[in-house]
Length: 440
Picture 1: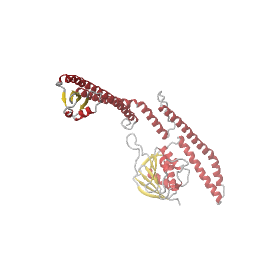
Picture 2 (picture 1 turned 90 degrees about the vertical axis):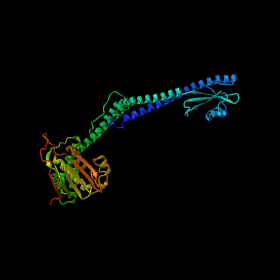
Picture 3 (picture 1 turned 135 degrees about the vertical axis):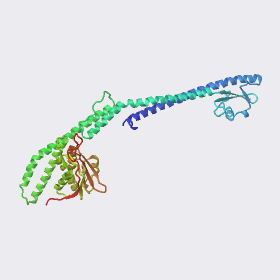
Picture 4 (picture 1 turned 180 degrees about the horizontal axis):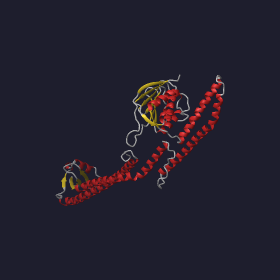
């Protein structure tokens, strides 16, 4: 497709080369045309000048002129020739006029004043010179077109090595953006040009970013691991405090929140390290989601339509759904709706919607984007996105029409076996609506 793209760099270079060739050919063609035209004019003038000079001598001697020379009065001259004769330099012996109108096409006229208020008029045929000039012009145009037919493809092919290196660099950059932090452009050939310098600079930048990101992840994981043990002791000690003490209840609440934060950080560390592996099972998606939402203890409307059977890790699906529902209740507004259609799970709230930075860049840890959706650490959606990657699923975020935010999880269906049929039924036809409420 890059070969057919008119905006590709190869065709821009080819067009620039063709334009330069056309400009050079045009300049050379104009100069050659002008030189040949002037030479033809000089040749014609020399012919009529020789004839007029001989006719002047004969007229001075006999009062007559050769048969190919006309004797006219100034009033009998054609207007252009008379004007040229009147405007000629006093040192010139004659004036010329190039007739470009039918029926005297390609004729060069010359007039020489003589005694007795008479003018000797001679003409010479310039057809040969003019046709030669036209033939030269056509030859130049044909040569330019033939040269372009060769130069443009050659210029496009000559840029292929450069285009290949640039495409390799763009693929590497996209791979890094998709998470392959160890991808590098690397040395490509021995050329020491601007592309090589740019590739080396991008590799250094990617290596530096990878090192900083790994240091950040390592620091987060180390902090979470170091805090885990004292937090367990703190939680245990908090449970020993009096149950009816308001201060003790506040300590237990904050200890529980801090413990949850540390557990989230440890989970993110495992996801970043690629240590998570899905343990798949074939489960009815509608029943799984309804059960998960019910156990969240929230007022959430669950609707299933043609929910399919999927092959996935139920524990990770539960983690994703819980995080999405919790995020919708915490940062959005009721009603919160969960819709299961086929292999898709959609969670929608009716709050202010996702911030623009989240829609553009995706969830970022410790960043909620805007205070309109409340306070938080920004870890819930980050974990959900990471768990979706482990499942091979696709998690997207969008703002619903009108108001509210929508998170959509697309799970892969059950893969067919080698015989071409699924190992289990792939569809559960249900159309039900349920409201999950806190257990009594």
